[in-house]
Amino acid sequence: MRRRKYIRINPKHGLIIGIILCIILIIISFRFGEIFYPVRNAVGTVITPMQRGINIVGRYISDKLDTLKSIHELAEENKRLKEQVSVLSYENKLLLQNKYELDELRELYKLDQKYLDYPKVAARIIDRDTNNWYNVFTIDKGTKDGLAVDMNVLAGNGLVGIITECYYNHAKVRAIIDDKSAVWGMFLKTSDTCLVQGDLKLMEQGKIRVSFISKDAEIEDGYEVVTAHTSPKYLQGILIGYVSDIKLDPNDMTKSAYLTPAVDFQRLNEVLIITELKEPLLEEPPEEEAINNE
Image 1 (cartoon, rainbow, N blue to C red):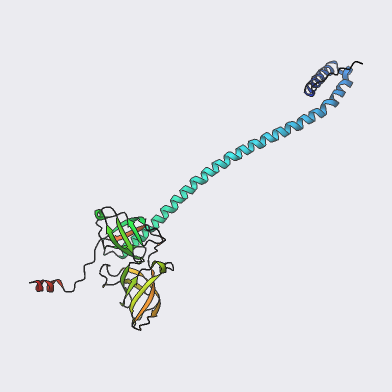
Image 2 (cartoon, rainbow, N blue to C red; image 1 turned 180 degrees about the vertical axis):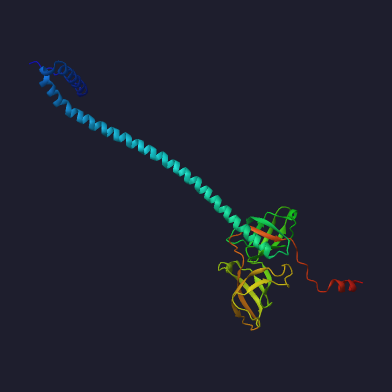
């Protein structure tokens, strides 16, 4: 027996042939009017579902294209907004930095007015020891600016420390909170003297030590302590801080206390240096010394 040969038509080609036939039939039906009315009706019956399907597919594709366009536009808008946020963040940081620097300059100006009798030079801190405190740091002014060792350094509301090393264009400062620091102070209200000693470990609690207070000193928490006239290096009357926790020592002869510094030693950027050294304490007046030398 002979095998029957089947003609295989590609579905795609079949669809194209069907569409062409439909178009031909539509043309004939319009051309010959009523004669082909049944044919036109049949063709309409076949094509209408196809048109509906094509319309559905078209709308789906159109919606997808619109969605892709929207996604692209949103991505561009998001990118533009991120750039704007970045610019605004940078400008905001600059404004905050300028505000902070302006506030510091205002504080320095107030401090300058407070100690108006002393000549001063402003300096910026450019380096410090690797810890949480500005106990030893470097400033950007030196001998070329008229600075010298033992000049007093101020910031905030009072005393920061003293210059320990001075070079042509920079100098090193040791703050009153440093373990090696000791300043003779005086209670502003009573004139009783005391010794203010640096203590970095204790400074973690925001205070340093005060000792050698007379047991008869009538002082209270909150009293101001300023540099004393007996200090060999510090000029008199500069605010050091505020006393607290006053106690009688075991020897029953002196009192001890704590002191909260007038300066924030965690946030220092600008300082003032008094360009005047304290005159050395003399055991005898110059006139008497001159007479004795004769």
